[in-house]
Amino acid sequence: MTAVGGAGVVITGAGAGIGAALARRFVAEGARVVVNDLDADACRTVAAEVDGIALPGDAASEEGVQALVSGARAALGAEIDIYCANAGVGEGSGLDASDAAWDRSWDVNVMAHVRAARLLTPAWVERGRGHLITTVSAAGLLTMLDAAAYSVTKHAAYAFAEWMSVTYGAKGVTVQAVCPLGVRTAMLGATGEAGRLVLDDGAIEPEEVAEVVVEAAVAGTPFLVLPHPDVARMYAGRAADPDRWLKGMRKLQARLEPDPPA
Image (cartoon, rainbow, N blue to C red; front, side, top):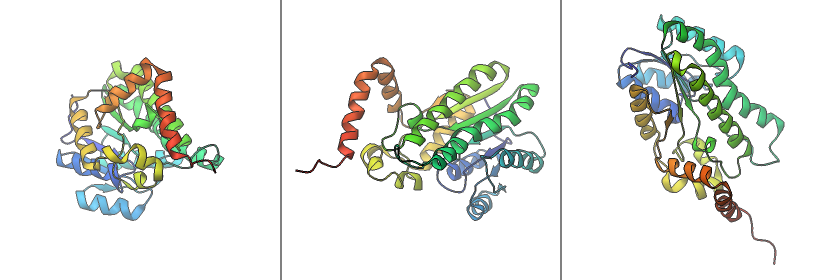
């Protein structure tokens, strides 16, 4: 189990959506929370609301992650207990997505986690405890229509979390991967027709995600945190019969494509 009361928690991408909901929920459990977001105004607004510490800035670049981790340690006056790598981007759609969109997706959705882990893990291993929570998305277990860069980088984010757990789980480092389906945030709205088709019906509020995440954080299990329990069935079906699963996804893809001219 992870002691959340009194813990020092850093949450990236916490200016809105799931990150802001996590900040509120962790504070309700008695945690001391560092709120990070690229949007400085949103970051400070959420921090003020929860009586947290605002550290706006880039949580993806090497320099930005270094500044965040060192700033959080100084502000908390102690080692970071829980790091929520929550910031994410969804850019581009298919093969027409630019290299710049792929680079941003890789940096924010994957390398932000790697860079934070590089800085945090040695101290966590030395003291025998630490907790990394990554917001991955169900796209990292399955895929998402019309979102190549997002799907690919979220798969990589899941793989990194899994590797971290395998490598450091016996050394006191708890790692959890949060994989929701649709969540009513600005990112869901930006998914357009694909989001409406795949995600809208079962979409939940950010607060519901935060509730599940904090409960799992307190317990320290499971590794795979599923705010939408049905994702487990989908993931198992994909693994058991990939061809059947791909056939079903192609049917959904066909519904996105315009009818051919008469």
